[in-house]
Length: 203
Length: 266
Image 1 (cartoon, chains in turn green, brown):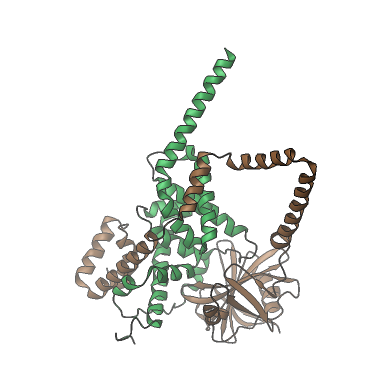
Image 2 (tube, chains in turn green, yellow):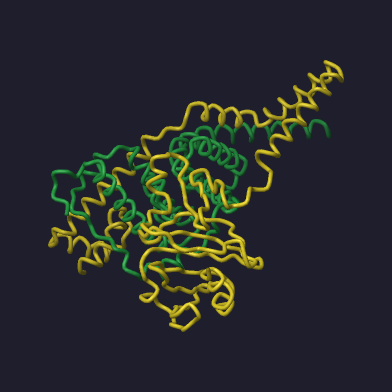
């Protein structure tokens, strides 16, 4: 009796496990490209990005029962990964301590930021290479880079981005607004430096 | 809705994240305003550029295989270790001893490369991308990823150098530094530790302290602004063409009396 019971238990257990493996492989693995794309821009290093994605996928698999079916799986996977990444950043002793940027924004943001729109057409951004965009992204402070990256991933709402970053929706909105402005500015400066804007009246 | 307001909302507008009311206001304004319409085009272009950049990035096949394999068989690593141990046992204690010796060598190497306490900061690598070298007590940043860009970006694009003497003296320890950007300004970010409290110092070109919010006080440094927000205390002052901002959980009084003079005094 006892042995048959335990045998049955193991069979059910392994069937459940089998099922989880199949579901995870079918549902989660297709998001690997999106996760890698985010990881690559978060870490700005391909080896680190690969490690990050691998750790995130394995942790997500281990805790897959915590995922609520019917919600956005891609958002959940990205949250698992972003958490791992931010914990690593905080632990790195060589990185300047993260101060609350909100506070600094309040203070330093009040000073004129000297932003003037360079007259140019939206074509520039379409013509720039993916590499140029990637380089400009890597230079954005992490606080702004994260929402800008996530907003470029398809099918993520501000609410989901806020959940991934662990901040209010309003913060996502304002950081996106500022982050995009910074990015725009650095891309325009770059476009100008490679002579892209030559011939157009940029004064 | 005027242009300033509209532009603030355009970023959320292109993401379809505005409430119906605000959305209508923005649409209404865009219908009449060519300038904002052009801005919208630019933002849309930027977003498309970003989406294309993200979409063109594909995970390497080796990573895909590795993950698939680990999910298929999470014991794969354990089994590898067990196989190696089994090998040792089969081949007698001499092999095992050799292996133990080589493991020791590897550990020593790992210790030296990874776990050894970091070198003092007067010359060293701060992160994968930034190297800092102290020259005459002035930290100079060098981006290691690309030497050409490093030269251009050394010392966070400032034309002049801020004076930061007496680092690591008077009980202060410089624990980190790096170029940073706040509201599109190039800013130097230094983190000091003083009696187990962390203090962030931001330095940027220009005399901006006078324009900041907060209360004006007279100090040994001259006029300074003090403020407290979200549990952080803050003091800002202008000196030698630069604005210095100290941020810490330390009391304002300590920041004023102990920290600021120590950092500024030559």
